[in-house]
Length: 273
Ligand code: DGL
Image (tube, rainbow, N blue to C red):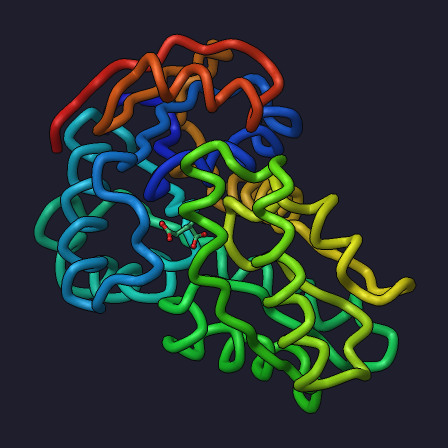
């Protein structure tokens, strides 16, 4: 293996909320981000489609040299990560690693709820996979987890409509449907890396006192811990503080939207995977 950037993948812009937190905590590393904006959203697609798209994108990052890839998309982590880790990676590059975002989030989430009632706001794909139910039960047995699918939120965000008054209708609808299922929820996870952009609106439509958790910071802390525990891989993560960003759709559009996610300007490049 030769030293290379850490790869970060999402179906579109969402993974930038994770990249932002990772870069803030671990600024010394190089990062290579790939957003599959040309085929987003993933959250409403079948297992087969999400697996096939994710597989292509992860392979592209590995072929670019990345030795460690973070799948910064809950839908792809839920529907494709395990298959890629078990079926594909050993044949592609056995020494390399692919990590997702569900496990590190689930590990900490259960401890954040005072009453043991957690709400999950996620894409239909993440909800139907049941991954959060399974993972939270492993780390915090007995915690009551309630899920709500929010199929319209990613399209609103990808199209830059998240701050507009029109978005309020669907934010209120899904928050209301979640709380109706379990009025005892005291902690809500934004279990889609796009959703932090709707956080202010989401807080408006959840009852006062309900804690809203974004996962970017949890994933960053978990990555830091992983790198400390795996010096054999960490040595092969290059450290010049560089960031390269690629998108499978229009880079001009990507740069305009990315400013809202990252808070600073970037220059992305177009790529086909
Ligand atoms: N950011 C992705 C996630 O965390 C959004 C999925 C989509 O493209 O619908 O699930």
